[in-house]
Length: 139
Image (tube, rainbow, N blue to C red; front, side, top):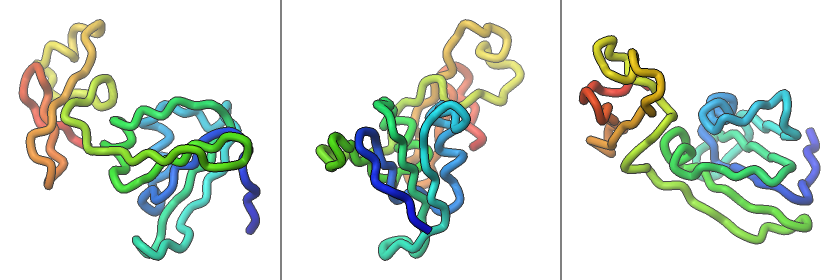
């Protein structure tokens, strides 16, 4: 299979195998409205298998969200057919508006104007808790 190079855009590499659609969902990128290529379950020397997402556009990627959903991924910024910048996401201390609290008594379930905010409790277990009710996030 051949996937050509992109001229201007981004390449999200080292996405865990089989999770690229979930990554796009968390990044709020609509595949039906975005010019992109998904390469799924390709060979990776570092991880065995991986996914790659190529987006031909000037999309702003939220590295905090990417660090939450695919921490080992890398982002290459492409301009004029050449990689001009490499970015590495990190596990964020706070996540705002990405995941929802499952506690039915939490203020965020009844007050829809309040942003869902979670803070990192334990990085090894990827444990986040709601800033309002301290309920653990279900990922």
